[in-house]
Structures are given as C-alpha cells and as structure tokens.
Length: 171
Image (tube, rainbow, N blue to C red; front, side):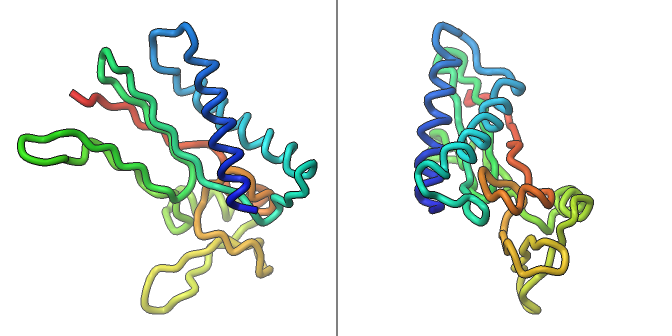
C-alpha cells in the first residue's frame, strides 16, 4: 500500500506543481508549496478507499525540487525520511550543493510535537538509534519518521505532513 501511496502522491504533486507554475516565471512561494503538500495528503486520504487502500498505517515520503533555469535559484520541499541531495559540478567532480535533513522522531522539535499530541517516541535498540513513533501505550503505528503523507493513525498523534523548505542558489 505504501508503494501505491508513493506513486499516487508523486503524480498528484507533479500535477499540482505544473499547474501552479504554468505561466509563472518565478519559483512557487513557500505557502504555495506547503499548500501542495496539504492537498496531496488530504487527496490521498480521500482517494485511498475507492482504490481499496487503507492509509491508517501506510503512507509515503515526498520530496520536490524546483529549479529556475534562468536564475539557478532552487527550492526543495521534503516530508519524511527520504533525503534529497542536490549536486552540481565542482572544479574537478560533482559536489553537494544542498542536502536535506531527515524528519526523525528523536529530533527535539519533532519529538515535542509528537508528545504534545498523544504519541510517544521509543528507541527499540540499546546500541544504536532506532526510534519509532507510537500511540502512547500501544504498539502502533511504529513509524520511523516524524513526517509523512498519509499514515492516518500517526497523523493523529503529531506526525505531520507539512514539509521542510530550503531555498538556495546553484550558482
């Protein structure tokens, strides 16, 4: 179900982005891109039952990169733990121009939001970080990220579908 959600979310996000960029010479505003993630999340939740998909414990990550080819300004929006790395040609090789940070439940602000909404963050390992999000006192959903599209149970306990945004120049 997660693969279906990922494919559907990517196609929907691309359609929204292309419609929004049509006739506009500028990168979308932060508010517009956040609204796209919001629309994709709620549309996925609405569409899933008709496709016999259950999004209670399934969902997807989503990353979008928009590059203005004239100014070389870029905008990256990510939700979840799928890291986005943007490269450019350096003097000798490719170099990292920008890398996003995964949305992990052990990060302080993420953890505080989850705790405030009735969730708990548990490390499943003594010797390495393996943090999961659960409904307080339950064994679900066990999500390893603090932001996602879909994942309805996790959304009720503070997992968010709001992306992180990064603007930078490729020059």
